[in-house]
Length: 334
Image 1 (tube, rainbow, N blue to C red):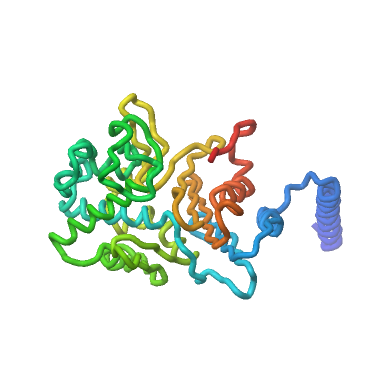
Image 2: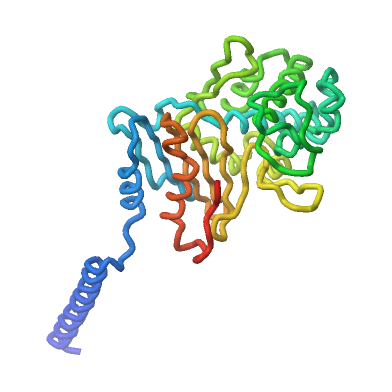
């Protein structure tokens, strides 16, 4: 083949490639102008957050396949991934994980009756297991903000699943009782030494109440909650069997599945399994879609009545995972 013929073929190939690029570019412009081109999820999330009227702080992190794909902190310049917030229901998850850590060591039996560890409780509580407290199936009064031995259960264990702050208040007492017997130290110190240090969560800490040290509030930051969110995949804290109990909805006595694991709610959002931290003091949430290796972490000091971070996390998840969700199916309810 002559050199001139090769040159003509090369020129024709280049012209054809330019024509294809031009056609594709035209279609992109048409789709953009007609609104049919899907917008970038980060821009949609920016628009969602910009539309929130508030006068407080807000930190949002989105991760997929262990990589951060979105990060925003407002007010900008005043907050970042290390800004400290009340951590809300993280305290319940830490208590549950501490109990499973002691269970791995043979020091606590999650299936045992709580009377084994707290024999002074009135007889009306003797049928409750640690498992029932962990999974909010104990029957304790959901109207109570703290455990009251003078207020007997309102239903038998395992009959129904209802969030009750008293469940984890009682678990904190039980955890402290076990630690007093085997390694005297405050429960929050055990959590810091055995759990947080293993995950390098150096900015998470506990502030006890003045009148009772076992009660108080955990504080954390977005960076540390990302480490906690990734914890199930790390295998650093407990064995796989214990972790499965942590994230598996329990079965009630009638065979129905409850929406609770240990410190987590587990439900379906438009065809995808969603694991979400529970309601508690503070306005922070971890919302995870394990099957998609996707999670949203949000912390805020805005009152939950003004901004529910759990709802916001679901809205953000629908922006990023909407095309992978079932159409025509309603979302999670609160």
